[in-house]
Image 1 (tube, rainbow, N blue to C red):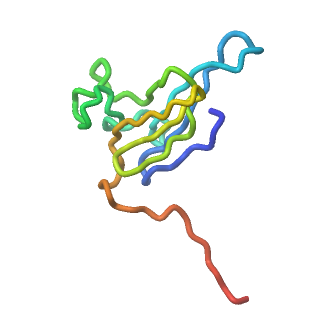
Image 2 (cartoon, rainbow, N blue to C red):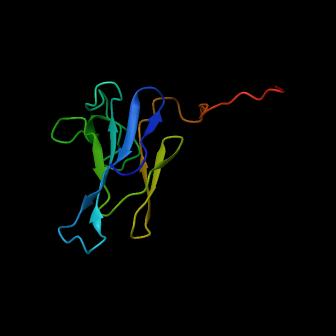
Image 3 (tube, rainbow, N blue to C red):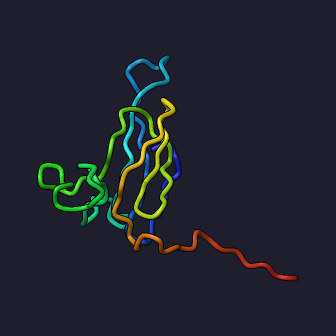
Length: 121
């Protein structure tokens, strides 16, 4: 993992992995966007990615009967951005990919990304 992880809600940790090619002189490779439980490091207890592309997260998105923890885009992915129930990723090949996901909060609901206190002191 070479990019900062993101905590999505309080139950999904999103990270990007890098799998380099065998030649260290070649900057290419591939990688996965992973969604794991931030407290155990194991897979989530629900399907996160819409693997079959139908726009609905359902049992049909399981891989070999299991909720899969990662998705590969065939090249190196950027840190994903999330908008509602969509995950947007740019690859090192310049492609912008969108995939439906199962966010830990309802689509359209906003979450505070951070805060800081402003004081006159």
